[in-house]
Image (tube, rainbow, N blue to C red; front, side):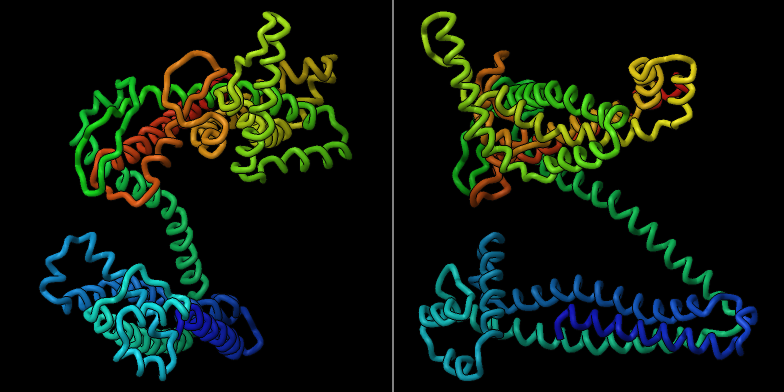
Length: 495
């Protein structure tokens, strides 16, 4: 039985338990709800939770543990010469065995019987015809292991189904048996819901911690091969990819060109997005009529839903050539030499297009913050004779400033982490320069470059991607901490 169907059956048992629990509570109340400590729905919810929660938890633990146990059992049956292969090769072989097992499950009885005497090439062809392509012809031990794996999975699935359904039924019966007039069902249900809320809020924290530690371990491995001072203070980026399996640290891994390009492009984008987005937010919040606001704001926020790759194409096909041709015309009018001084792929191109992408973030967040300022403050300022412009500058903006600063720093973090626009609009040249008319690249682009292709996570050329990712994490964390400091400082001054 598939996992989804098993979950549906568990929830169906829970729904039946809910109905029976509510009915049992109603019967015990004898028409007087005051005879019960909790309402009927709480008793039904307790019975449903008793049926669903233990079964789902058991199912999750079972699925997490059983796969590793089965894999260990199958690997232990490999021939000795296969066990002596490198770990990476063993992992690839087990993946192939898993694919063969899935393919055998799709075959009919006739094909399963005929596959015994087939040549490896014919087996590969047969599996490919059933939608399971293999990278190479299966070896005999792989076929034996695949059949064992299929049998083990079937036995595991059958045991899981029986045990989980038994637990669900027992939980439902115990939940129904616990219902009594003085049973505190509401307290029990609320405790479960509170635990669920705590778990949900902890997932984000635990996920962040997990991401940090996963990057940190690989970053430490990188710094064992490349000194940290060469990475953080190096001015040349030339990783020189090594061959597969090599641990050579040949090349230069200077961060400064990448970091300079990241901050330069993000700064140009913010210089374009902040004035436009902030002025748009002020107009929509304070000057636009209800009809115009209801039309203009959704149209402006459509920009936020456009994929970044589309912005990249827009920069590559439209904005870049436009700036290049404009610069050639300007140069021709001034010097008579119609040679462009703005490249199609440049910091300016990427910054402008990224700024267009960030406009809805700035305008929408700022608009919500400005409209959240109490109306009494506006009315008081206008009542004292101030104009709408003076009210905006002297009253509303100081009140909304902490929120706006936080919104702008959040937008800056979005700009620093952008990838696709930079790849297509700014190029991949890791260089240090002042001119915004030449190509540069960012940290995110080089992370993609270093992790593209069939690579092993053993060489510094690959591990440097984790060091770059850790650097971006620390950079955005610093922005968030600074945003919190600014918000608290201005809020104290205002209060």
